[in-house]
Image (tube, rainbow, N blue to C red; front, side, top):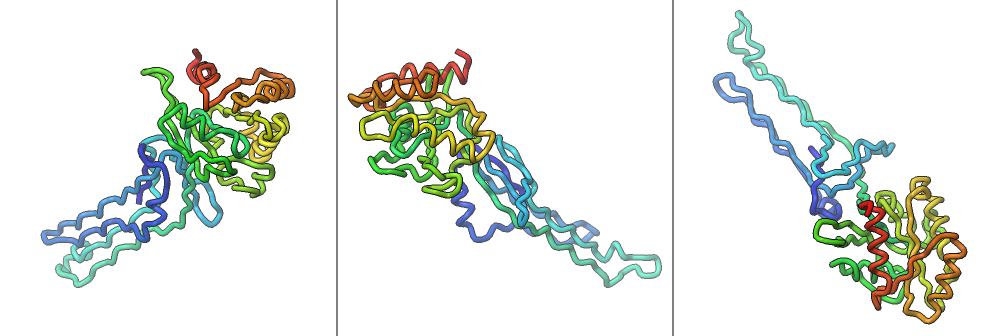
Length: 285
């Protein structure tokens, strides 16, 4: 059994709902002392970014992080020897044959980590889904209640005809996510695959304090892994069409001690500057 990473697949759903995957058996030996044909390999396609762990210790066998990457997950058994192999000058037609050996059995755990250039992070309702729908053809669910996004959504953002990148809308985090609060840490693993984090902070009236909202997410990322804490990030104040937007964005900028982009996915304010900043980081513009 061979696992192969292929483009165009986005989940392990089909594999999880397939009760049995069985490779072809080898053929029996044939007349004329001919060896039976070996069974064909069972090649199982999985999404790029699939990690394969061996149970029960969950040792990582391979990270299928590029198209075409393969792992021989379980090998078939060696074929038995036919009666011709047991012939001797004294016993030219032995009635002896050897059974083939059973194939290898392994218990595996498959984990999919999405791969994206830019990962959108922020508290629930920070505007991640709306921004992704505005910049790409992706159509994530958008609503005014927490946890609208229940699974990561990818979109292709086009800067020009020759430059595109993948943006991922990751489910909203809350304080304690690394310990399982809210949607828990199920999606933090995807953030590790992104090159840049675009940290969105809701700066509309009635939203949490922008500095505290930012700190909550930073603490969760740092608590989850050192890889995330070292990831390059860009802060952006969202919903700047709100009358309170500029005052709250200025407060965030002062608290972070670095420039903060101002955007509104509804009006389009600042989106061109945002794309320019991302293009500079990704392509060195």
